[in-house]
Image 1: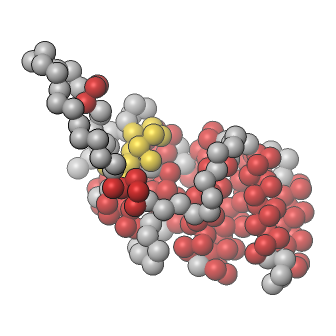
Image 2 (image 1 turned 90 degrees about the vertical axis):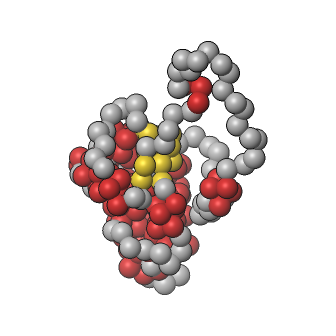
Length: 193
């Protein structure tokens, strides 16, 4: 099933995609998992296609074909009713996927900004690296201080996440990646890796 990527199309995880993000269920690479994390039914697929220097498009197609992603059906209110009869009301029970999805850390309700993301990365470096490897923590502190624009900070963030994956495993790295994606300005996420 090949699907065209258009700005109005949204992507969402299937049950298979959510299972991939469960602890201990890693079968995909870090880039595919990053797209799965961001596919929340609210972001246009064209935005996700720009990720990783434009390689996001091929990754999305592969995830659609493998059944990890899908384009959700539009809400009933957007489907024309040619019979002029009111559509039956949907039952008002919560979506089990919404309650089953777990996020890492506390929910973040603040503004997306480079400053917020920088403070998160500083704190992360201090908590994870300073006790075990002070020189590595010092390296990341300096790198974050020198990162004067979004692209430079994103590069440092990706390096930190890569180091976390090496030291603490993919589940921990994925959690940090998910949290960082919620803190960074959305336009910055389309930067090439």
